[in-house]
Amino acid sequence: MERSHSAQLENLRSKIANMGSYAQKALGLVLQALVEKRLDLFDEVFEIEKKINEWHKQLDEEAVEYLAANGPVARDLRAVVSLVKINTDLERMGDQCVNMAYIGKDSLKKNLDLNIPAVRTMFSIVQEMIEKSLESFIKHDSQIAQKVLMMDDEVDDLKKKVQSDMILEMKKSSEFVDRGLSLILIARNLERFGDHATNICEDVIYTEAGQDVRHGGFV
Amino acid sequence: MERSHSAQLENLRSKIANMGSYAQKALGLVLQALVEKRLDLFDEVFEIEKKINEWHKQLDEEAVEYLAANGPVARDLRAVVSLVKINTDLERMGDQCVNMAYIGKDSLKKNLDLNIPAVRTMFSIVQEMIEKSLESFIKHDSQIAQKVLMMDDEVDDLKKKVQSDMILEMKKSSEFVDRGLSLILIARNLERFGDHATNICEDVIYTEAGQDVRHGGFV
Image (cartoon, rainbow over the protein chains, first blue to last red):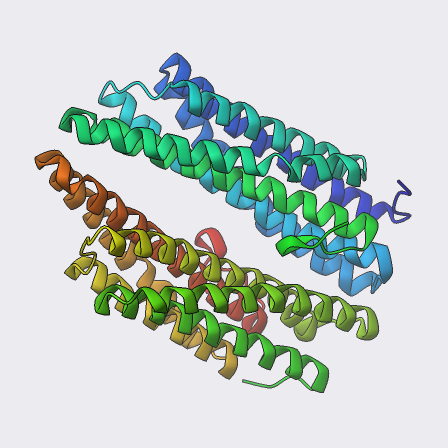
């Protein structure tokens, strides 16, 4: 739990945490828009994603400046390399939210109800994943990160369930095709959002413990 | 076109280029398997992806070692930060190929024909994108990279076309649901594969020209 000694690195970290809170907010807005059938909230998602894209460029630049100025080694070096990767993951989370906002907007216009239990459960789990991944990052806590990694399978299973349920529905009647496809695509975007939360946690574990747990490595 | 002066960095670059050639090979195998209806080729894709995942971890580690040992600045620093990102893009390309291999395997078993003109064209363009992105990386050539960026819109348009065509087919008859969904998902994976080729080119431009062209920046 030892913190970094560099104020510049801490400053970068807090900017990444802030960007993460916006990715989290975008995800919440997508869910709220789908549940409350509010088209206006999707536009907020688009606005947030623009901000995230700006920060993405800016924080990469700051990370490179930090490396050039300080030539860090050991834990601080791992921390800044992880920051660059987490930055990319957060930017992709913004992309997933925008994808879902497009699908959601189109579906609301067609008066399709995307608010089904399995997808609601997926949203809940993925929201917990982003929340905990940011907490593990902020608190330098590998144990919290480890817990998030274990949530990923449940999201995968739910995605498969949504997909097979919707295929059955779509086969029953052509009127379910649009809704079924929209739900399948929302589920796939949620799964990928969860994957990015997992990536963040793997980077937290790498930074704090110096161990690479990706692709089936263990701590 | 000035080359890096560090033999260690050149060594890392050639390993990334080699990993890229495997991502390219995996994409070619997916197409060949779909066209020739050969289930065995999908297994080759799974094997290649395992190798790519191993290299992904190993090359990240080598990049961090390089940073720690050399504390590079300016172009060499940009080059190594880009390597870390390109490494992630190549690993994701492996993921896309595995996704397509699962979909393809399932479809072949159900005797579905996924070999339609729009998807064939998508494969051709995306194959050119990965080829040119690796060429731009190997040759330090921003101009080739710039050309790849312009190919992305065509892939997006084709993905939309596949999606709308397949929705129509699926609505016509329930027997088209499995095939339509498989083609939509293949098209989406190809589009994402193309996105990663685009990311690589943006990193080449950033390394060579020092300019960040992501999110609508210009050179």
